[in-house]
Image 1 (tube, rainbow, N blue to C red):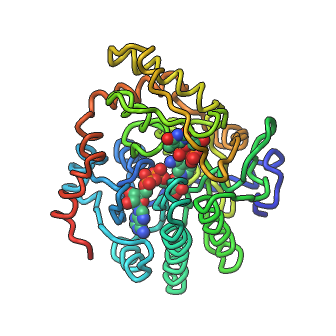
Image 2: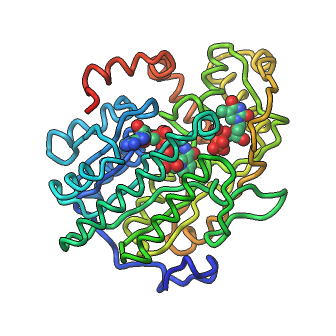
Length: 376
Ligand code: NAD
Ligand code: TYD
């Protein structure tokens, strides 16, 4: 039985765990993005993981090979890591990579991921998140017809569950209620993954995670944007009343959760991942300002003076909160970073990598990508 039909807390180990899966070759999509690059770095650095990695990434504005610099070169020389610039919507390409490299597991991160962009221009979100996931599923189905089975782990978000009131948590069986073009496109892709598992017998797992933060996050998302603006003395734009609540998880802890699910979870199961760390945006900003002020030697009062309340995001979800009891109880997962430590680490990384931020913000990193990776 799939735990899609089982109340999360009633699931037993027998129902939801598989004999350990030890993939020989992973196709990681979106491995040059924020979370995908954390997954690639942590897997290549894990002596217990022997899998080869093929990283398929289109290098959109959010994809950046500098996120992997220093972490992949040795593996590349040893034939354990390959980068391919390409589009997940290209089914023939995905199929060819699976066949050529003997891929036995796809870990699917690639997506358009920023809610504000989805409000301004939803088309890319439907094309990449829905049609891209569809192309991957079709590629796997087509390989399966030749006797080549590939497991798919699909990385999703807690935003598919909609918005909570002051109380309550999302569990794995909470009904989907997406409310932005981004979350609707992710929900659609989750439904397709489950439908392909049910209809065609594909082996799939799914995880829904809360807000991530940490090194290499594109500075359009709340935490890296606020750090960069503090350092540059720019306005800190708070949407609406700043009382919206998000749950925050350090990115490497998410990458570990994904790996546990990939290697241990039974086909057909889904897993909520979160930091048990709910915060109102304004409270988070106050904590962040204190850390930036101390580490960068800035006046906290001057940084507070940069806080600017701006017009609210249309349809702004009020509260997300994840109950991650299932993955804690059955897979023994626990985050290694608490929020205070993770924030310190993130600010320290930013201060030590000002050049990365400057290049991303100025768009200079695109010139290098376009010189070295002509679009197919
Ligand atoms: P990101 O925007 O930083 O990275 C996305 C990556 O996908 C980029 O490297 C980009 O170049 C690549 N990509 C985009 N379109 C592509 C295409 N058509 N073909 C190939 N590659 C393409 O995103 P992220 O924050 O790392 O998120 C990764 C995944 O995790 C997404 O599926 C997202 O929905 C999910 N997620 C994110 C968060 C979060 O807080 N960031 C939380 C939960 C789940
Ligand atoms: P974001 O990082 O965009 O993640 P998501 O919308 O997927 O949760 O935003 C986190 C929260 O911060 C969200 O409630 C919107 C708010 N926010 C601001 O107040 N100002 C900003 O400039 C940004 C980018 C976000």
